[in-house]
Amino acid sequence: MYDLTVIIPTFNEEANIRKIVIEVDEVLSKSSLNGEILVVDDNSPDGTIGIVNELKKAKTNVSLLVRTSDHGLSQSVADGFLHASSEVFVVIDADFSHPPSIIPKMYEEIRAGTDVVIGSRYMEGGGIRKWPLKRRVISLGATFLGRVLFPDITDPVSGFFAVRKSVVTQAQLKPRGYKILLEVLGKGVWENDKEIPFEFSDREIGASKLKIKTIIEYAQQVLNITLYSFSHHQSAAWREWKKVFKFGLVGVSGIIVNLAILQLLLMSGISGYIALFFAIAISILNNFLWNDLWTFKTSPKRSVTSIWRRLGFFYVISAGGAAINYGIAILLVQVIGMNIFLSDLIGILIGFTWNFLVNRRITWGRT
Ligand code: GDD
Ligand code: MN
Image (cartoon, rainbow, N blue to C red; front, side, top):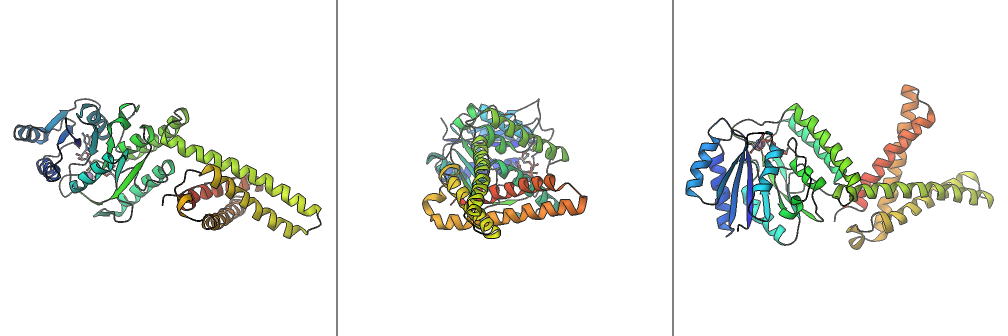
């Protein structure tokens, strides 16, 4: 039995495949890991298959899966999960965009109890080399959308990651497009993850196969994972949605507190503007307490930062949310002449989104 399986999806990689297999093999032996190298090829018309067959003769730990239907990167990786003969899977590109030297570290993390280990381009220490502006923009857009589902993960669409077999065995994956990791995160069964920074370097040889269709498929995938999370309540995306619902409910409680305090203060003879100020300030305090003790009660920040610090962040971010609400409402009324209530409602929704996302990341984010 192998310690791990390194899955390398390929399509027309005759220029890279020999070198990447040899390098991965070397990295594994240097760390005394007994690893299987599984190349999953989509029946490349170039020399890829021939080269891997040749490598197989010299190295017993190299295997090849040639697929002839349902062409695609994500599908190939998912097929690799089914054919791997170990309990730990690492996925890596063939074109040297991902440094194989990190594989042992990923494996160690899984051994230490982490379910998903992600090679991240977007955390401190990570980066991207030699990417044209267009690709950077597309990638940032995709990453942002992915982070709405998994706010703690800086690179939910990375092509370089490791998973424990049990994460994907029971998952009803619907692999499409390029972002198999997002599918694994959205539908796999996992509790904890860890990111390791790496520098992505674009391929030297051959061409990227990313097309416009890939982007459309990605948007469909995000929607599909969202819908899946609504019917599968054990999924990680559902854990996030639950926070959104709770945050919303707390927001509603804040409105009630706000109005009640306003009424109370006015009745006790305090003047209008002063009463309003305290009503708002106290309702934000109300929201903070509920969110801290309920919505985000599992946040690791709660045990390492003081409550005053979190409260301070919450007030500043909420003030930003109010400013966004106000600005958007005025803009809609002024520029397109929208009804003021509808404008306000849209402002509230965008302000709410801001409040949730920013507080989720900063006030109650990862440490
Ligand atoms: N089996 C199979 N089938 N493999 C494929 C296919 C396919 O249809 N398309 C691409 N591959 C293989 C390539 O041979 C390579 O090993 C790897 O998948 C990545 O393909 P590239 O075409 O080089 O992808 P990229 O550089 O544009 O995209 C990379 O970055 C993305 C993040 O921005 C990849 O790492 C993606 O996985 C990643 O999501
Ligand atoms: Mn590439």
